[in-house]
Amino acid sequence: METAANAADRALQKGEELVQDTTNLSEFASGLEAKARDREEKMKALTWQWPNQVEVVELPKPRIIEDHDVIVQVTGSTICGSDFQLYRGRIFQLEKGDILGHEFCGRVESTGSAINSIKPGDRVVGSFQIACGECSNCRLKQPSLCDCADSDEIQRSLYGRRKPGVLGYSHLTSGFVGGQAEYVRMPYGEANLLKLPDDVIDEKGLYLSDVLCTSYHCVVDTGITKGSTVAIWGMGPVGLMCAHFAFQKGASRVIGIDNSWRLGWCKTKIPKLETLDYARVPLRSNISTELRKMVSGEGVDFALQCAATERARSMLHKLEMALRLEDCTSETLNEMILSVKKFGTIGITGVYAGYTNHVNIGAVMQLGIRIIGNSQAPVSKYWKELLEQIRSGDVDPSIMISHRIDLDDLPKAYRIFDSKQQDSMKTFVQTRFSNPPAPGTLPVVGLQA
Ligand SMILES: NC(=O)c1ccc[n+]([C@@H]2O[C@H](COP(=O)([O-])OP(=O)(O)OC[C@H]3O[C@@H](n4cnc5c(N)ncnc54)[C@H](O)[C@@H]3O)[C@@H](O)[C@H]2O)c1
Ligand SMILES: [Zn+2]
Ligand SMILES: [Zn+2]
Figure 1 (spheres, rainbow, N blue to C red):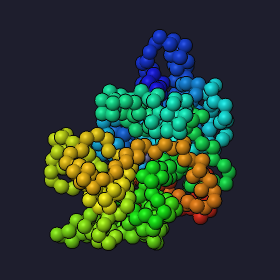
Figure 2 (cartoon, helix red, strand yellow):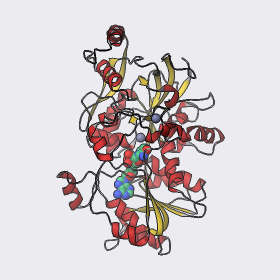
Figure 3 (cartoon, rainbow, N blue to C red):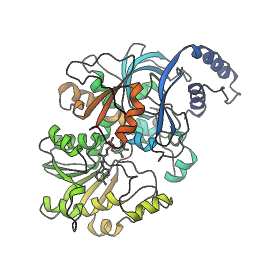
Figure 4 (cartoon, rainbow, N blue to C red):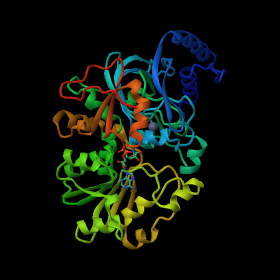
């Protein structure tokens, strides 16, 4: 999917010569023509430079390359927990100068010739995954398993098959140029853009890109039932919204596990949420024991993994990861295995990129534990339903938002929020094209480096 187009797009973004398959001479010529034109039209974008170093730079504006492309003028974007994995250089195949960001909303500026249902001027939100909309998996409403991506060698050898592309998420996921920018090129626009109605403000509609669909899918796909008990590892934006949707699906108790001020934040937003601070577990105890005590010994019905997996706590995993003997730590997975009831269910939404060691597979087998990999969330399966939930007030994405910042402040935001300083949860990143903050939403803040 899109290899030549992505290469051309990236070459333009980086201001390089258009080196691509010259067998398609007309595209090459029109590329050069467009390049000359684009020299006049610049945009700002957040680019990855090196582990723990990102910069806002001025680059040529993207242009239509394929007839199914749509160019969107970005009016809102944000940082996902996954972006910090890129920021730290933990995801392979990231290149200096790559534009990050996979969540954005905006206004359509131009459309390719194959686009019929979207027109310039429409307000839209973009899906973080780039699916073709036409393969058998897309037709089955499983865009997160789209077969059309041209996954790279590493991904194919790790997973044995193709995976869909992700916007702004390294060349491991097809190298699409990201959305933390003033403009973005959205491939397969008909499949990957949803129109936003006038009564849904950017400050809410933006989050249909990823976090709302991700958390809703985690709850639905793991199969949370009425009256069930649920524990969530990681109370970031995904964990918070999972708690909301778990209660919405009838869970009787939801316990959020984390170690930071975020537990307090989540409790103020969802007062019936119970919390467990893993850093305050008594010396001779552990998370699973403490959790089981909270639910009368047997364990919870469901455990949801909504935490990052690349930060090991034990020396053993730190060492194995440093020596590249594993890609992710199994610590939270093992805690979940020991925390669910017999025949309990675990849903994995927090990203595991590759291998992990020392999984307590014996307990999984002996206790009949079901482990569900939730995959990337199939965004377009849920976003219309969730749009209606936003309109009816059944979900309010603004409970996640802690900061509204300018695109220029994104490098500071990555640096500060990576260590979770300044009470950050989820940002709204405005560009020069954004409307002023909607009534009742947060004002823009300048970040102190
Ligand atoms: N599957 C998908 O489609 C999809 C989509 C978006 C995000 N994600 C993943 O979901 C996860 C959560 O996303 P987010 O944006 O909320 O991330 P985040 O980084 O903002 O939040 C993760 C939280 O987990 C906590 N945490 C870390 N280690 C923990 C542990 N051992 N036990 C308990 N808590 C722990 C952190 O303190 C943090 O508050 C990330 O791994 C992200 O990559 C997956
Ligand atoms: Zn994301
Ligand atoms: Zn597809």
